[in-house]
Length: 218
Image (cartoon, rainbow, N blue to C red; front, side, top):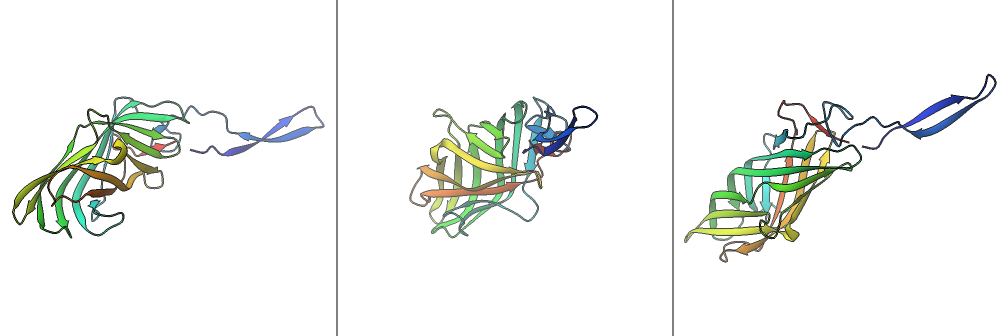
């Protein structure tokens, strides 16, 4: 978080004083805290998690901001905290995404979704003090999703890999949320019924600890 500026009055003798403006003294806040900004540190080893709000969807659209593609009524984000240093800095986590209750519209020849599997989890994840959340894979274990879809000719399997092997989100302390917007995935394998690209969007809130305490980013 950006620290508030404090006005500090320093007396220099009985007849004179000087008013200084300076950053607040370090409060030892870690990047991830619970309950309030600059509150207690989220413990290393704890799991933070969130789902999508009731009535919203996790979307794998065929175009950025598009209405067509796969939409999932249930989705979750969870992450084990591996390092939570003093702010400003970046916390290190191992994150897991899940989606279920998915339907698909606007894709020619595709009539439904049999299953969706997110592969190679957990993923290395950082949460920076500026709210940037970065999820990365490796060459051996990329960020990827396997979709088994119903088509007019039977079931097909499509595998999509994150563009650049990374996806990014924004953490917001206003509602303790993490939001992914139009994160591009590219088709790795699959027949013509599998679209060439997919764009993942989802908002997870509120992010809480295993004790259900809200998580803030400092």
